[in-house]
Length: 358
Ligand SMILES: *Cc1c(COP(=O)(O)O)cnc(C)c1O
Image (tube, rainbow, N blue to C red):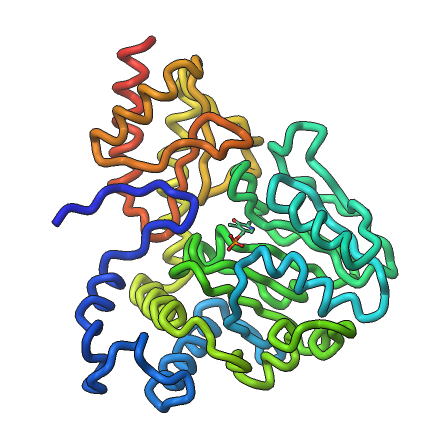
């Protein structure tokens, strides 16, 4: 068996230990004689899997007891609509911070539901930094921002100030890569497939007082209150994805939890950025203080060499390094499950490539 270094932005690498354990448990989960995929979501076996996953997630992020944890479907993209449907609370307006492709999409969707004002934007410098000062309307229902822009590689390294207005974060691509002060946020959502599990599962962590205000016409499965009351099981949840995410949570706990994961992620990101900064051939477009630890976009001196770079990398067992079609260049996503050896291998390859073409 050989595993490659997969730098995909998502679906992305999962810890080999998690996949191996899922393999071991495939035909017979804990003596049940069933695969988790075959279990009733109402049966005691699956209920225990779901409850343990929630417990472990709460422990990892130190989620306060006045927050609901929901395991939903529809991806982070559905949250672009589900957030306004649930959080407007009759106010009719919400403020958005625009820092790249994902926050632009969130704005576009929110405009179907309310009056949207832009509280801050980094468009003036082509979305290469994270504005920290938000101009928030006092009567806005919430302020939405993307805490890690997956495509542009821009990350908020602390939670911005939004005053009294609840802050909503799309944390999809750095969820569980570092501790997060949940109590500073009204709602956090994240698709699982970037850093926490398989596609098909979305985490929503929401403060109690923001739940129970869904606007008229909200589909039942999209109402946070109804889902919370039903333990995220109004209908059949993404059972297998929840099980794998639960194994990822256990793996994270074994790694020493999020503080220890953060240390490893800092080390991996530093290795790559230090090299980028020392190179006259490769370049990172993102402002130093806002560089993402998870998604590292970079360009080559001459874009005509992009193809050769990608082909050579694939030969060495490194794939999915092509940048997003909207920005071009390269992007290395180095989530929790990417071992430091993968980053070392990439940097060595880049050094050799630079020497060859300098
Ligand atoms: C991937 C991503 C999304 C969209 O996720 P889907 O699961 O495809 O809907 C939204 N926001 C961010 C920050 C992402 O990285």
